[in-house]
Amino acid sequence: MNIGIAAGIYILGKKFFTHRTATIALIFWCLLTSNTMITPIHSTDLPFVFFALGGLLLCLYPKYWTLVLAGISLVLGNWFRPLALFFLVAILLYMVQKRYKWQYFVSLFGAILISVFIIGKTTENKIGHFVYQSTTSGFNLMMTAHDEANGTVQVWVFADSTKIGWIDNNKDLTFVEKDKIWKERSVEWIKHNPVKFSTLFVKKVVWMFVFDSWALGSLIEEDKNKRGTIVNYLDGKISKIELFISLVMKFFYSLTYYIFLLFFVYALLVHRGKWWTFKKWFTPKGILLFFIIIGVVGTCIFPQSQRYHYPVMFAIVLIAAYGAEYFIEKRKGIAL
Image 1 (tube, rainbow, N blue to C red):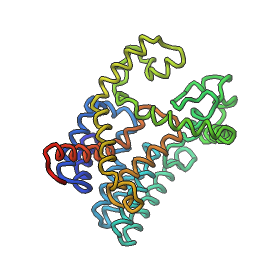
Image 2 (image 1 turned 90 degrees about the horizontal axis):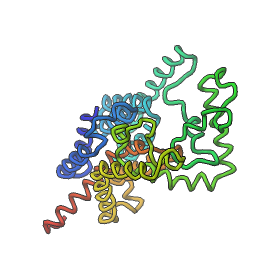
Image 3 (image 1 turned 180 degrees about the horizontal axis):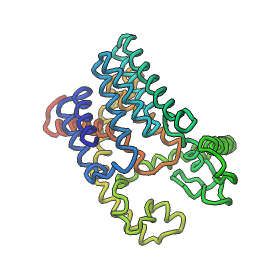
């Protein structure tokens, strides 16, 4: 799957940019710590990106069968992580921009609806509930909708009866009933604390992009219980020395990632005339940037950790490669 994503980035780079940009993007992707360590396989992020990106790529070569496969692939990706909507929005913008005929839209959405129905009915026959994607929205939202929320994953809110996420009769309830309770509590808190919930967005973006060492897990920290070192320091569980050592190691492992982010920002600045007008949003390059924005904003409704930037990294490295190509050509004195 990791190799498939790399191939998809190269194909997307050639389609939206140039052969050189595609090559640079492929190199960037392979140099990310989260890929060189071959560790994303333990999480849902890898299969999600594989299937969702596969759905996007299939839509770039319009035939009835490719659109049907794209719909199936998007639903499979969404089964792992419920974020395929971000890809679907980008796909629809591209299809509108390329003036796809209406039959292609029917093929795509028909495949999506049928796939959702099959998965949902299969789970309903097994557990009594129509489930076609993750059902933890209330559980996740609860971790970032309380007075002590700091934008990170805080599982302790469910620990015992003194915590905000505790449900007294939780053993007698189904996962659907519990998630509904958490969602209702979260929404009620957000209604009374809209300013704090909104300001948490800034912190969440920082948490989301601060490091790219998430895939290393306990290789960085000897004690497996000390993952998420910054959070543990804020909670008083580790010393300043332990925090400093961990941050230095995470920074070291994230060096290539920071370089790519700089090229990403550089691309936006030097090509700003190609991004910021409404008309440009409907170009392939603009759609990629729009995908990143809605992906980050949509994800940051919930608590954040480092690995949550992984689903948008393929788009970031493509734009970063676009900036790197411009930088190389400018250094050579070649007019673009």
